[in-house]
Image 1: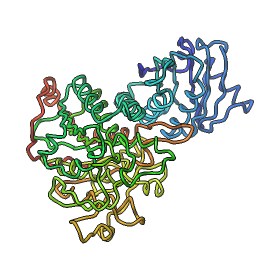
Image 2: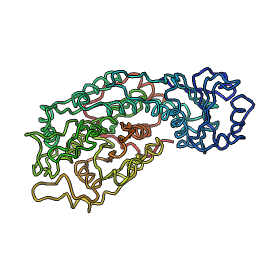
Image 3: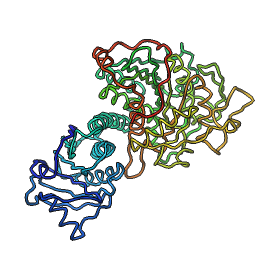
Image 4: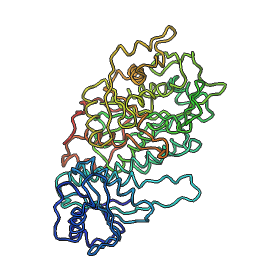
Length: 513
């Protein structure tokens, strides 16, 4: 989809030829003398339109307007959240109308966050999965103009570009997540990662069972034993800064189908366990956005990927496995497999001497019980990193909520037969899972995002959401150092990523404003 940001007042918007024009009407809308203003003024006077966010009144070929269809939509107080609600409602109402070119007129005083919200709302609402349908219908919208009163206002163009790149990443993650598990296997994820790296200009390694065995990833290998599909360990390297700058490492859980293993899940809704690679999809989606935005920082992506299935070789409750760190783990429940593959990836992350590590995983049903589908769960050993992620989530309208990591929660992970058990009791399950991961992330600032409630929707709206790509991209962009002319000149010819970055001063977690 082609997005454009354009300076276009309502008078000029009247003459813009398009299939549909969406006009956001805020609480402080001040009508002018143009045809669109008169249309809105008449609708407000007749109480046919209110400023409540998402309320719609449509008109067909109104006098003095070139657009075939006009949708006047309430935008409330004009905040980013209200803009998102309004644009979602409008684009949803246009489904099935075969509109190809869309003009979205934002409130006159819209802020940069509102521009970001408008782009993401159009992209999100117009997305349709077609990959495995016999007669897929083409996507309706192909060109979207975001109209503002003055596109040169500080911050608008920057947030627009960020939103456009983020939208590409979110859609990439959604498409991967929605693919069926007989297509989106670990091998397929590796192939897509290689292609993404080749097109995006960064490095990619895909390790198979023999390489993973040589690394000593016994915990990861144990989970993969029950499947005929070979595991893959994907390593992505994006270099947008000097090799001496320590990278941010993103670790994504890539269980492409989770039956629960020997501790098998109930049959009801087990099909949704194809979404258990939501963490991996979000890392790949973030790298898709990095390829478009080219920020000035270094990022590593690590994706341990396999299936969790029951057969004669599958991991059993009571088995003890040895992780890459050397710590032994008693497996009390084979359905708590995500932490078993992540722990080895977290140990592998040490070699990059990172300034921060963030793992992303559809890890626990307990997090869904705690936070539902609104906020992702956030756990962190570092207050600065946690605050930066919280701020990014609010900015991207992809929010998370910080949960505790008190040491007392680790008591339930004690066992007589290994260094640690892979599960504790039912109480505080999201926290005890995070405490397990924390054992393997002591060497760097670390955060864990539990996206079990936010990575996909069930029911009639079943499908991947692409979260938390928005949060991750916003966080990464906030970590860029201030641009200088010298830095811009040096970046004109990118250098290949080094095998191991030298230690450098930690990047601040404070958001750039």
